[in-house]
Image (tube, rainbow, N blue to C red; front, side):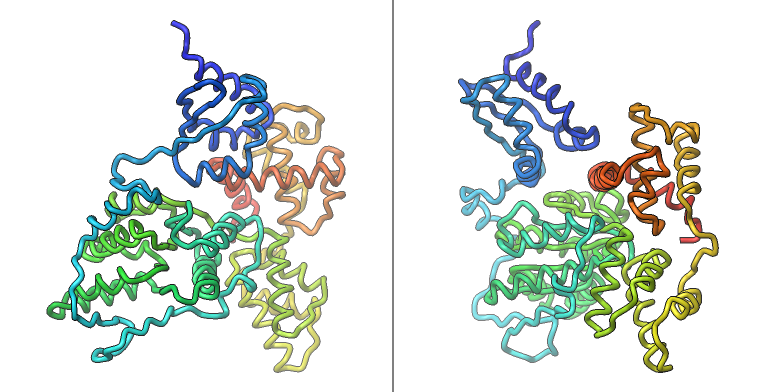
Length: 472
């Protein structure tokens, strides 16, 4: 039996797109798309979310447009249908859901009642909500790099239109010291500057839990607690993984989340793990964490570490020699907090002892603060580690073969060579297959893109880096 015309057209389009889009990007952004219909010259596809649609429009619309014009003609028009999950009762943010949202408030408002503010001492009658934001954690102090570009871009987009965007909630996750709190607070600060009338609140999960327990233990205060949080326009909850195994807190936050989301309010959440990897949280809560955008923060690359050190030292009125910056960036690789802490210690030591900041001083001090490997990582060591990991002959990575697995291994070796050594791009290319500067730069950009879009590929790079730096 012949396939419907719209499916044939889309399959032909996919074959064209697959030739020009990296495999990881194709799997992430094109395989989930479903062909819906072809009516005249209007072609309709179904996408999983509004964010998915916006990402296609921003990054791949040219490819889709050219493929459709080739299959349908120059009059081809593309139409989207955003899929709604079955457990979501409201299609948001469609205007038609206004009436339904008004009916779904889980806790009725009480008239002539002063709602207590859990952030001030009991007895204060006027509700005055301090956003609890640290002005130091602003976007101007947040250095952008491959490790955080997605989250930072989403945060700036949210600040332009809080609550009425595809990134609600924004779920920021990553290891300790990678800037989750900084980014979350920067979003709140930016929104408060652009929309002073909005009620913005940052609170840690631990403090939220404490306030909930206080409300439970005081008669008639639980409803006040819920009403208070339902008044917030932008709610930022830090370290939501700490809600694990706390059923009462999760239930309260579930109702607060629903009310704010359905009312067009913005939620920003941070965690040490992705929603799919969190344990001890109810599935109904986890499913809501996945409604918007999950943005991972990764350890900073060498270039980002250099930028952080230069920005931090400039702010402190210190001009570091380039050799000191490069040394610190190559040796202090754990996380941003460790980088800044090492720099503070170096500046303090030099200031108190009236010493000039030199490479020798940086080397002596850094060895006392962080676990610096005595053995420098070389390009040869990187090539060996990559070849052993993928089980390919060491000479193959230096050849001109275009086999996919060899090209991928070569690109990873170039990427690690740039991030883990101080070797120039030209030297990296010369030692890895006799390539030029532009080829190495392209390889590094390709690997960075795949790390952001392909979880398996990101694991490859992380595993190899751990082999090279077992103590990190």
